Image 1 (cartoon, helix red, strand yellow):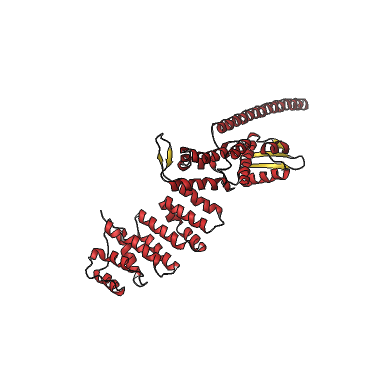
Image 2 (cartoon, helix red, strand yellow):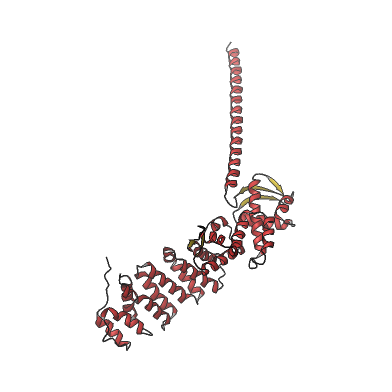
Length: 388
């Protein structure tokens, strides 16, 4: 059922129109609100609460005609003489009064555009409206936030990347003739390529399994021009350092915006994670690790080990006297059939070890029981002799 639309009497709206010197004598009552907003260049603060309440009620109705009041009102706020704080306060008041999701989205984008000139204010608004933003979960809103954070050169790279990732995860793809997915428009294509670049260049981005599984990343396989960027992530995720070297040199011109040092630092982290998993509980000498990781300096190896520990990829103990590393814990860089087979093999090995240990304990227990039985018999004989 349609919501009831509560509008002030024509007298109140007529008084506002008169105050703003807007002719309204021949305007129908149902058109008066929109007429006032469209005809205004600036609404006095004393009249704003009334107009705002009218706009909210109109937006919550099922009337397509009355709902047109919202975009006109948002446009009016953006060009009004209100200071930024007052303008944002009115936007937020409107956001809290409106139920329609699409209209809430329009208001949130308007708030982002209003506050983006002040980085501190924008971050405060972002924190305040976090629950509303995630409740709507709209790709365009996340992209607007990302663009604003990027434009202000925000130093919190993880926050900037987070909103880009949220946008990418919501990009809609469409099936092509071969039933593979592809992008619906060129803007999405360009944004995803930017995302791949950021994913390769930012040192903290290590969850590549989840990233590669996104439909937007899978869509990179739909054309020869974008396939190389999918292969970049795939090589980074599952291939070896020599394979990445070959891939990078082959596609160097296309990958001009990829930071080579960061890329290979990640490759070494992933390779080290694999080595740790394969050598759990073992001492591995520095030279072996340096050879596999393509590192000439011992200090570089130690720094890499510390990076891996800080990123929760492994745990180890370095012995700088004999130049060995004992890996005590490791996490796989990605999960596939080979990973599960390796884990299964290790678990079976541990099970056999525990079974052998249990047999040894049981044997010791039986030997001990036999020993005490013999000793008790001997003591019993002594008692017999003493008794006599």
